[in-house]
Image 1 (cartoon, one colour):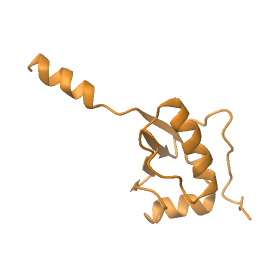
Image 2: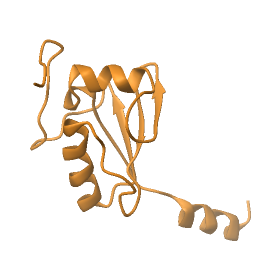
Image 3: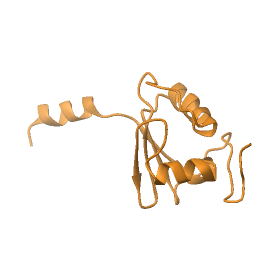
Amino acid sequence: MHTHCIEQLRGLAEPLAALSLTHLTPTTRQKLHADDLSVNAYPTDFGGFVYVGSPRYRMPAESDLAKIFEAAEQAGIVWLKFDSEAPTVRGLPTFTPQDTIL
């Protein structure tokens, strides 16, 4: 493999953070699963990928996701991977399947 190819690929990399689905309310989890979020998202069988951007390209309408976007932007994260087996992040709220947001 050519060195310039590897260097170029590294230059094109965007930071991604994997975090637990429990950071999303049940309503937002359902929207992610249905590909119905207010921001660009790509559902998977166990969560999904959500594009934050750098700088953030849009503030989500979902308040739980908006809080995560603010933290992600400050951390320099471009992509979020929500996964049922990913770790929770201390300082971010978590929600059980019974929780609702009024």
